[in-house]
Length: 145
Image 1: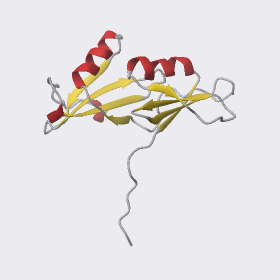
Image 2 (image 1 turned 120 degrees about the horizontal axis):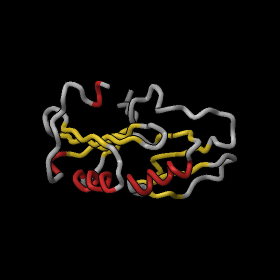
Image 3 (image 1 turned 60 degrees about the horizontal axis):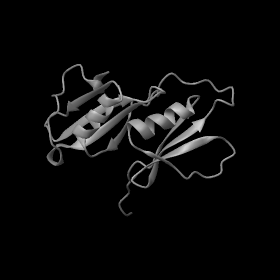
């Protein structure tokens, strides 16, 4: 039998009663672009990064489905990213609360921020390709919570 691989993350889906705020977060805060979406029988939006629809949003406001308070058993969703210092400045300029960390070993830097639905977004940066510094990981860090 040949080698088997799950591959890389294609997209994640959020069911929201806050579609406009969620689109705005992914556009204005993270820099994704709203793009083409199939003509589904339900409202929503697809958010693109580097030409790929990586965040799929479904508007549940026309339904009786309750808005979940956060991402449930999914702790966070991660992106491989570029521009660590630039993203920290962008988040600060938009008044967003975020944490930044250096993974033990120092080869990976991370930024954590929450979207309007309480979904934790992890942005990963290869330290060798970045400028600046990241705080060291602490015992009471994001992954532990």
